[in-house]
Length: 173
Image: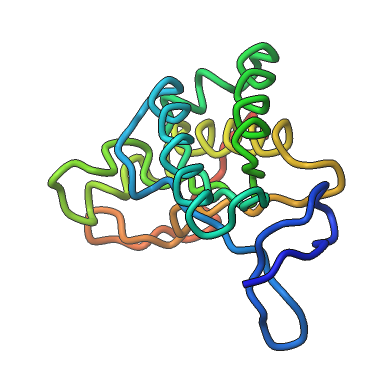
């Protein structure tokens, strides 16, 4: 582990050596239950505690699981975005990725099929992903690109596989 400048990030960030360079080391919040903004904000303390153990004083990348409820609370609300951004900065965390799957209920005792609902044939999946993109853009460090992990487009739907041509939604983001 080392601290170095990563292009697109403001502060030296905890990184791992990789072939051809270094990559940011991120902690994913998908291991912590919490569906709404209050729970996500509380989970930042858990991430900061890990960062304090492995790299005191350094910035750590955050892989943010953004369930639909929290995306709805953050998207389009500059005050909520500013507050969450301040919470990240205070804990020396910097958004590096967003996970936008599952929609909710990540820690519910259900199978993979339920995790894939709603799927890409629904407006709800499109709207959720658009809100995740809006949040990513609002929280991204200047010049950084924030990848968003989401449900695979061709995930089987009730035994059928959707084809891209069937996934047309007016009003896409």
